[in-house]
Length: 183
Ligand SMILES: C[S@@+](CC[C@H](N)C(=O)[O-])C[C@H]1O[C@@H](n2cnc3c(N)ncnc32)[C@H](O)[C@@H]1O
Image 1 (cartoon, rainbow, N blue to C red):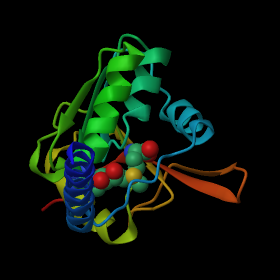
Image 2: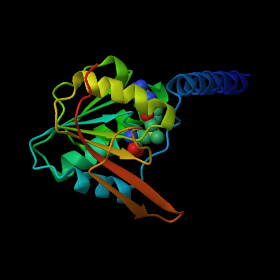
Image 3: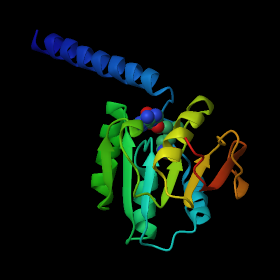
């Protein structure tokens, strides 16, 4: 009897977690698809960091950009936002186990100001790019580096575009020096 109750309890918990993960992923409009470490490394390289910048990952997934940035450049301030609770929890665990001092926060990246950014990493989806571009126009200082995995910003010219070969196909990376359009 105890075993049945325990199994039912676990099943219910699992269902609730699954439901909220699906709900928040639906709200975020982007599923959690991690960037491969190879692409992370190339994107960090492309950002041309000198080592004391404030670096953001907007939609930080499991925190891999923040951890890698901090490992490579211990002097950077690495900040990320993730809005799906289960993904955030996994990321929080990963950050804790990495031992790296990164600021990995739960929340909607669109609702937090990033005026102190020197560099922003993104891996989102086409429909979100204009929304984030408008945020960047409001908040980013001219010349802030923005590096996007797979999705370009419509109407903006990247200073660099390259592809990284993976096991399945190639990943395009777009690098911008953000020049805010007047709003
Ligand atoms: C494709 S994954 C990329 C994760 C990580 N940046 C990487 O490259 O490995 C996109 C992540 O962004 C999160 N996300 C999407 N919109 C967001 C928002 N407005 N605020 C915070 N997180 C968001 C999703 O939940 C998802 O985990």
